[in-house]
Length: 256
Image 1 (cartoon, helix red, strand yellow):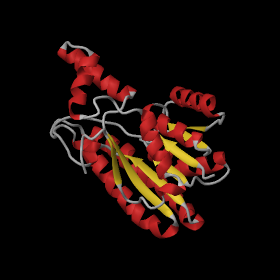
Image 2: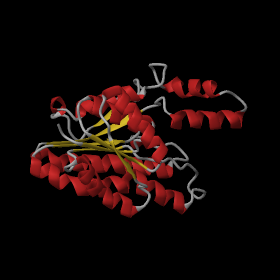
Image 3: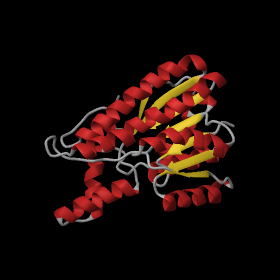
Image 4: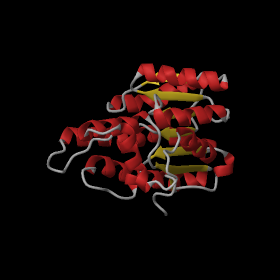
């Protein structure tokens, strides 16, 4: 079975994807900045599947960590990963003119530059093997860009563009690259955003979540298992004809 490297795997969508790939039979390496979250992800996967993932602590805001990650994953997995999922990402919001250059640079480094650097270290093996899968976790903000999202939306637009290019470059070598674009997913990030807004407006977390769901027709949060299930399919042989696409997982919020 192909080996998989998943970034941003210490919680939320990244953990759900790592679990889905392990459940599909892949040996997985999970990477993120926080060791406690990674250890929790490893325990969840081992309990659910009996497979123990490789844990790679790595801060993708540091270029040297991104450069080193393909080699570290190759050594730990006993071979170069044929599947790369970039789920690591941050959101730094603010009006242009108020958003700091540091927040802009950090967003670009984690959200898109790290994906480029890591993919650069893995695609040669994918092409030589005649098989590979790259999945980037983008956002509905890869399709549109509301006020105060300059760093996040610009980086996610760039990540979507990079994914399309990777798909074109892998297509003749048995590989694919696709972007998953989630809506509101039941993660700590979304819940944390809801709590912060609720505190500022003197209301409840659940009331803010209900406002989030006004534009999500299924009237509930997407689950990490649903995102993980799509990723596992795209990484299977059955998904071989789906390439260079951006696929919404948003309950019908954006029809495309």
